[in-house]
Length: 395
Image (cartoon, rainbow, N blue to C red):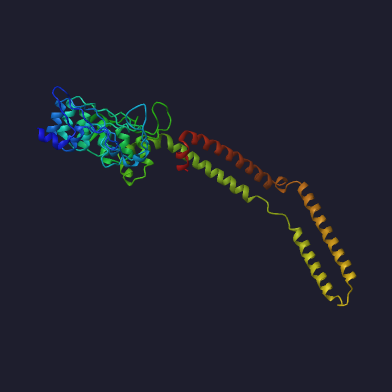
């Protein structure tokens, strides 16, 4: 036994009448004790010996080495507790992210005998690590169905939520673990009757449906919401069985009528817009174009006259003629400004409602304006209900 101990760790020190309690204090391996090492070395006999020596079965290996890869850069120490604070957002991918506890180490590494020994010693199957994950969460991450059933049979709770508010079922939906998702659904269902291959069962909607049963608000961490907005191809495989039946039921009960109502409302709004823009009068006759043409011709004739002047014209006569031309140009600018101001004071041609077409057009434009404000009000209400991110994703 002494040789076995030395193979596991050189830090084990046993004294008469004393328990075995050594552990690493280095930053990377902080919290790892001899029981963790025995489990990693796949040595159930050493695990049994250490349990007999009352080693701490709830010791947490929370060093940087046991952290998911995307959380290592966010680790921060805290004076309120021994373990560190981490950024909660993670994909749980890590080379040795095994849940910190000896029990979760044994479960993730497939050490069934060590797993049962630690459970019989009184380990808490619902103990949560820094990410709030229990042994069931870890078994979902590593997709170990057999050990999941073992942990569930000894009393592990399927409703425990981690830091992100995910239960084992919703975690399976988020990570697109297809086998684990349907397996947990079968564990949570209540069978009413079964004849041959036909089964009538009820499934709890508290973790599945997008509507929170307590608040009535949208649950962004529900299984259905995580599957629909998932970014993996495997999420499509989850849209089967219960979830697709739930979508059909929600469509026939709530969405179908609302969808067709909004469709016909949009068609009516588009028809009104078509009428308004079709009956809209065009621009008035371009009077300025004719005047501009005459002015240009006048300028051309002027140029011709200037060039037809005899070459021996005096500088004084040429200066007087230039002054006359500039005065004429200033008079034309004053006339254009007065004409622009007169046109501005006239009644808008779009407000001339003498004909039936003009009245129909004006009525359609008023309806378009009212419809626009109603749509904006409905959009604000829906954005408050769904949340900004989900609202823009549904546009």
